[in-house]
Figure 1 (cartoon, rainbow, N blue to C red):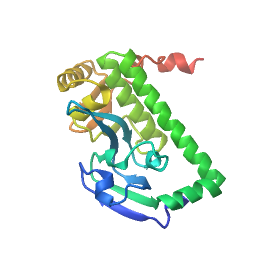
Figure 2 (cartoon, helix red, strand yellow):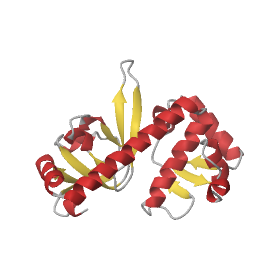
Figure 3 (tube, rainbow, N blue to C red):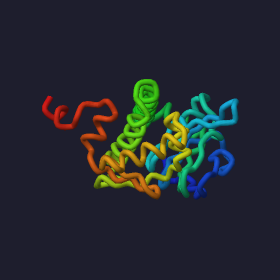
Figure 4 (cartoon, rainbow, N blue to C red):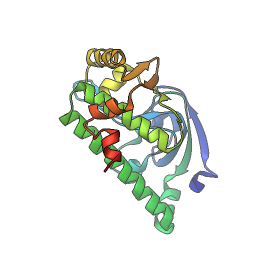
Length: 215
């Protein structure tokens, strides 16, 4: 975080594209508050979400490595971001070993998220995909101490959930109702309440928590 101590802070509204809003498409940003997502526009006019950013995440590493434009980052709610110019970021990467290791770790975490999403879309049914998203975000938030209980804020619409999981809004709505009726998880008004963590975990194809703890 020391990289961002003297950085410029920006406040953005919901549904703003990051590159256009901040006026710099060649920088790395730390999400201090709020949520954002990385998306791709499809040739058929649709949109798919490929990653979700929570507070504490770095945005723009793809841009520094020339792999993905910053214009494809959208705010999911009001956010505060801290900026590091591209040239300063590259100097840090080259001169500071802890920073380089941290960035490598962040890229590894992002790759694992992408792998989990791909595995869910290709190997799980609709209920399993939604359970994976809920559990994955819950785990990330807990690790950063952004939630202390089984409840967290989720600033995604059902359309955006569908764009992330490869499902229609009709599918999402039906699954949300069924998981609530079965007392597994309740998603209502951008609030997630996990009612049965063990059954939610089983839906993702992972080992039950009790079984995993015993090994």
